[in-house]
Image (cartoon, rainbow, N blue to C red; front, side, top):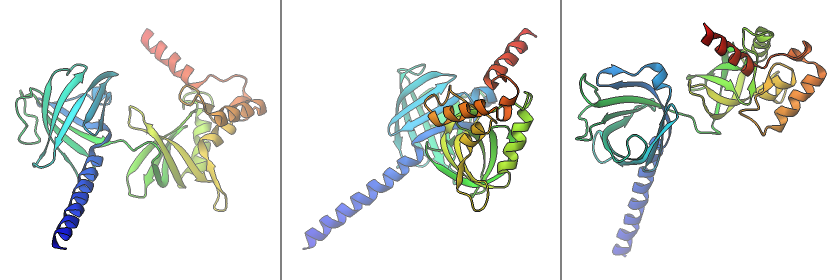
Length: 295
């Protein structure tokens, strides 16, 4: 009986330990974006930092910098404090190299990593002194695809962008998925922004996420009750159907609902379609960029 009890206890302990380790691993697994980065005492420029995306999954890592891939293995040791990472590059600029790092996850969910790019030893503390090969980065975790955020719209800074104060008090910038509304300097741009603000300002919304863009905006499907007694309205589709935005085919090529909504708005000459053939915002942005290059 006693040996059976010991065996049962050992099995339970093994299960609890594996569950704890799995939970710890889930904290680091995901897609991460730097909010600060310092190498040898020098801050990374914002435009460089925003081009970096880190993905961790089990013992695999993938980093892209301006589209250039860097892949390999990342072995984590959580038995020491601070925790340690042994990083071995297999593809890209760090192929064949070993980098050593320490890491921790803050109460706010930020991942702080200090790398020794020389691969000689693990850093002793989270610092990047001038003249060293220590690289100190603090990352924020991207919300998983399909995650839901609920909160209140506090502002409408653009014709297809919302500021949402979530229930946990965090402020999120939401870019509406699959649509592209006229820029504010375009014809009908301020009209579209004003109507969007009328529809959702100070209202409770539900957002289903579709990743983030390079600037940190959450790409999402937004659902809102336009009146207290109404059913939820799919805001992205509603804006296209009312002639306040285009179906952004480049990023939602297979979305038949958006395609059909745009066609109906065109046929009915709703909203921006009242005035002939308006310039699509992606064409307008390209024209502005071309003109800027000529100056």
